[in-house]
Length: 396
Image (cartoon, rainbow, N blue to C red):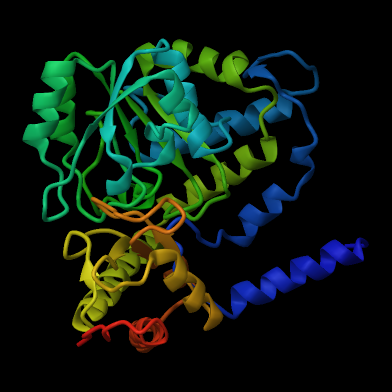
């Protein structure tokens, strides 16, 4: 790289990545093949439109790449018969917006989990476009951190939302997609599954599948799927044209063909036997670290984890999640502050910390290192409490 400033900064970021424990649940490290696709000549070409029906010439090869990407995605989830794929959306938030554009009118009702309990901002946050354009109705978690499916059904029957959303950004339990599908059927709603966080677990067959219950599935590719920072949509075939028109020309111009190629690579990688072993290790490591945190006295939202992440409830410690995350960064442990159910903090200073093990599992983290992390987290919290003249947290 001839640009010395950017080259230096890039090397510093690479050094930071190598020398920290990265426990951000939404981050991972893709393969070198994925990186090569992202940096290839495919980033140059404009390809607005559909396969074999582009608004620019010179897209015969690009058409083949997109066709292969769709083919691999449908094969990965064994849903070729009933679903169609859209692989041009560049992010999860844009994928969700495309769904809303396709199937909703301004003012239509969306039923989603309340934001503090683990929903994504694109599921109806008041300052997000989803919250500005649509009427958002919420369901809530049970005291043990699960989903009250009876409550969801009761609200859906009463409100008759146009769309029901399940799949979350901070939720550590297994989701009953079949029950959600039946609720959507009863209320005559469409069911959208935002599987961004658990998509790799679904691909590995280590949690229940959303198919055939979901009318639409949106997902990013950079989390448990270990792909590029991008996204895709799977939709029942009867809705394919409607969705594609909402994507283009509805909200997007030219897609990023280098990302489409990179996604095709990660879909193929996820079909390989080694991917299932990787996800098993992710689940094992996450449960191990969660249990170690419990042993130290930390309160866990939902008390345990059944996937790749969990959330610490700091509400009784006197320390907010932002302060805790910043202090942990000083000792090279990277986590993110996150809201918890009934959070009394602010979006900037919430009362929780979200922790995930997908990236560090990819790097081969050991149980000894996970023990080290749990110990350092308790030491850091006690240090913060002491400096703020708070009663010392009674860890295990």
